[in-house]
Picture 1 (cartoon, helix red, strand yellow):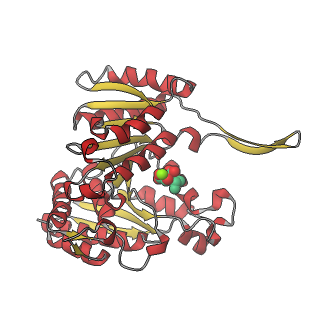
Picture 2: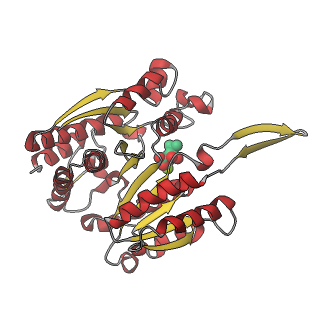
Length: 361
Ligand code: IPM
Ligand code: MG
C-alpha cells in the first residue's frame, strides 16, 4: 500500500516526536511491504514566524490532498511568547481549530488506558484503580462553544462577552454513530455525557443519542451529567468504556482522563471525518520547556501513528505490531524521564524511537 501522509511537526517538542513516529512507520513499511511518503507543512507558531498566520490556505490544501495527517503539537508559552501578542484568531491554537474545521474532523477519539507497567504513576489509590481501566473518549470536535458566534461589546459602559453553544441534530447524530460503532468493537457500553438538567443543547443531545441507540441493540447506553462524570472518573474509572460527549465537555474530561493514567506522554488521539480520513496527534502539548533536549516521550505520537494505520488505512495487523512494540519496550524496562521509575532504564527521545523500531515484528 502507498500512503501519502502530511506531517505537521509544529512547535516545541513536535518535530522530535514526529521524526520518531515516521522512523517507526518506515520500519513497519519495510517489514510489511508498504510505502509511506511524507509532505511536511507548517502550522502553529512556526507558521506565524514564516507567514504571519498559524495556518496557510496552501498548508490546509496539502492536508486535504493527503491520505492522513500526522501532527506533533502546536503552541508556545502563553504570556511568554511573541505568538500570543496578536489577536486570538492569529495565535498558534487558531491553526489547530482551523484545520479541524477545514478538514471536517468532527470525531475526536482519545483513549485513556492504564498500562500495568506504569500503574505506580497513577495518582489514584490502589483500591480505586482495581484492575485498571481502558476507556475512549469520543469528543465532538467541530461544533459547540468552540465554533459558535462570539463577541465582546460594551453595554451601557459595562464590558460584556458572549459565546454561544449550538448543536443541530445532524452534528449530534454523526458523532453518536461513531461512538456506537467504536463501542461495537470494544465492550459495547456507551456513556453519553451532557448537562441535560440545565442546557437545551444537552436535552437535544440526549434525545438524538437515544434515537441512534435504537440501531445498536447490543450496546448498553447510559446518560451521565458532566459534573457527575468528572467525579466518577476519579472514583470508579473502571466503569467507562466509551464516553460520548460534546466539544467543551470532552476537552475538560479528556485532560482529567489522561491525568489518571499518570502518563500523558503515552496517550494518542485521532480526529476523523465522515469517512476514513483523519488527523493523528498525541494528547499532550508542545512542552516548549523541554524542546530540543532529546528527553520528550515519543510514544504518544508513535501510538497515534498506529491509530492512523488502523483507522485511515485499515492496516490492523501493522497497527497491532506497533502497539506490541511499545508494550515490549515497557515490559523490558525502558523509560523516558516522564515515566521513569526505580529499577528501569532511562532513555532519550531518539533511543526510545530506535528501540521501538527494533521491536517491530
Ligand atoms: C485540546 C486542546 C485544544 C482544545 C486547544 C489547544 C485549543 O486543549 O486539543 O484538547 O481545546 O481543543
Ligand atoms: Mg484540551
